[in-house]
Length: 436
Image 1: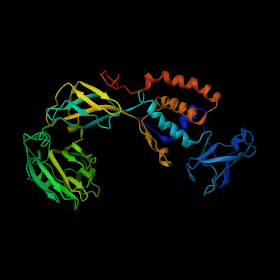
Image 2: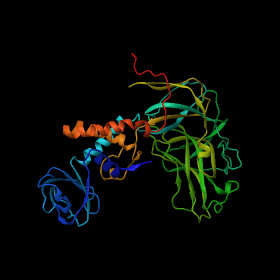
Image 3: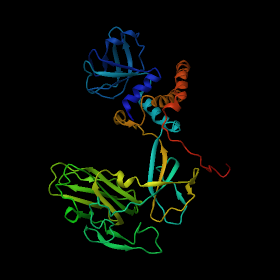
Image 4: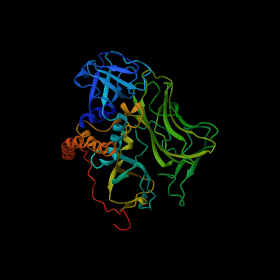
């Protein structure tokens, strides 16, 4: 569920009784707009209001009214528009600057996180067979409410089309601008390899884009033409620590299409499952490859790859492998951000943290009108109630206006239990400071 910024702005304006969307009745000038339906308002009653076209010329450009003539519905504003408004052009009127309204809506996200939030997952922590405490990733703003341990997926399955899928030998893969060697398991290293006795180490000096490729000619039970029109997924575990800053490391599927199917960028935080997922075009006939790429700078890059899958279908087959729910204790304050587990995660097994984050910001500029926020018509009422309180604090809404809003805010508060997402924060001991 989501709403675009323009609809959220209109909903908020209705909530606070500051809503008017009209349409010009005649063409204006660069300093005037005319709507005869505004004649219901008295002369100069709209002075200091804000007008904003939401269609055609001057779209979303806000102007403040200097004067208003009731008999003709003529609004005069400054500064002048570059293009004169046209007849039948839709516009908004605001008592409060729409830019300020948007700011209040965005700020309200922080106040309502207990009721309106996004469920987020982070899979970047890797067990080492010894540790029971981990730093909480920054993506988990509240929580984690749950911690799961990975159940590793085997690569030697009938549906995995790759040869040497464990990436524990150099056969069937081709390196370009990478130096590929095998990294053997050692008792002194509990992080690399991830699962087995060997993985592939890929080093590039950063002088050119480096790739590690398996072509369809080296795969089993698939051809370039048999993949045409099918949804396919390529997933590979890649270890990378960005130094000094994370570079572009990603996985991809290459076909006859000019646009490769590209995974998310590696964040440079250790072992991550890179997933490239998409549809192969229907006319595909000659090209089908999977690829690991490092687009680096002069710092050079070392990455490790282990266990890869390429198959027909979507990514959930290899991503939803977190079946073991584990107990945890969370300690968070302004300095400490750690999760303590009541178990030892297996060496090489990923941990999935489930937490909460703020709903998306609408931001600034014209794009805020089309960006989306994770609310619907019902849950947005909670957001509007908080935004109205912020607007009152910031803009000094009249006491009469705020008094009228109190009933709406109270109604929105009573509806919280009906509209908020159903993610219960289970009890976990937490230490917020040294004194409580």
